[in-house]
Every structure is written in C-alpha cells, then in structure tokens.
Amino acid sequence: MHRAFHLRLIIMLGLLACFFVTGCGESEANPTPTQQTTANGTVVYEKNGLRITHPKDWSLLHDEAGIFADRTVALETPNTSRVSLYLYQSTPKTVKDLAANVEKQLKLLSSPQVENYQRKAVQIAGFDGLQLSWASHNLSETRNQLTILDITQGPTEILLQYHLFDDDIEQLQSVLEPFINGITFNP
Image (cartoon, rainbow, N blue to C red; front, side, top):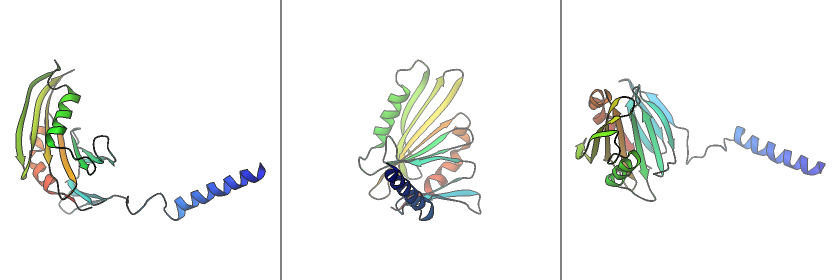
C-alpha cells in the first residue's frame, strides 16, 4: 500500500509539472486570447482565428463552446446590452432559426408582459438579418431591440446577435456598423 501511494504521488507530481512547466494546459488549438487597445480607442480581441474590434468600454463576457452553437463569444456594453457571436461548424443554423428560438425563450408571442412586438427584415453593413423589437413590462418598462445578422465568412456559419436596451438602442447605432465590419474569422 505504501508503494501504491508513492506511485500515485509521482504521477500527480508529473502531471502538475507538465501543466506548470511545459504549458500542457493550453494547446495550439486553444491559444490564449489577446486583447489590445488601438490608437483610435477600440479594443481588438483575437482567439482561434476570430478577430473582433469593439469599443473599449465593452467587456468580454466569454468565448467558449456554446449551448446553441459550436462556439459562442459574448460582449456586454456599459448599459448591460449584450452582443453575441454564434459560430456553427457542425450544425449550421439560420437567422430565422435563431429568431424563432428567441421568440420561444422570451415568449415574445404569448407573454402579457410583452407589448408592441415587431419582427422585420433588415440589412446592416451589407449583411441580411431580422430585427425584433418590443417593450417588456416587468417592474418597469424596458424597450428591447434584438438584431440577428448572418455574417458568415467561409465554411463556418456565423450569426451575430445584439440585444440592445432602452438608451443603447439610439446611442449604439453609430458604432454597430464599424463593429460588424471589424469582425473577421480565419480558422
């Protein structure tokens, strides 16, 4: 038994050494992301072939395997609006698929707290999509605008979804097109 303990200890120390000394915790397929602030005050985020240029006051929430997509990258604005990129490699989805999922999850067609729901086709920065807008009445009234665009570049289906609230609906309009144009994916 004493010998088995020593063998386990040696194996554990070897694994720890592998992680700390040689960097086994990271592989070339999953490099550490980089974020750099540019001269014009934007931030460039890069990881695994995805490059996103975004306003410096936006925060990266996560970049990971997603529930609805093979990879999900989410950013948040200072006013808690959310911007998400969904990358589909195994099972592509469409803008209509994602819009239907949002309608179902948020009960946009059936909830008594949702008023003035509208769904319309849009084209922003040369990309086609759908824009959903509504007012929700929970504790107070919140205006919502959720836009989904197909920004596919190459064989990977890429859907961009941004969900803006209240003042962000007007305030962020001027940054959305440069933001969209600042997204590239080269796997």
